[in-house]
Length: 111
Image (cartoon, rainbow, N blue to C red; front, side, top):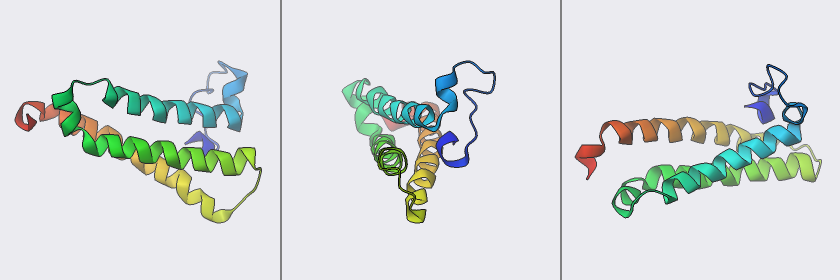
């Protein structure tokens, strides 16, 4: 949320000045998205097959925040239609968490 709405929960206590910058917040979002992909890839094969939807959401999260970060920070351009990638990233994070919770609750029925 920090990259889109300029709200940072990570730097609320003044922990690291780098996290207060938009570049720091964007990099943390990208690292989080990549770590969600690695989380699913680290699961055993039988569970990884069930986790196709969260895996696809992880890829969309990584792609959307990367596109948003590259256009807004690296190219330093402002395009109003680029905001959709940030919103897509937030929606995918929400769905990713919901699907992980759903699969954790109904794990025994899915195998």
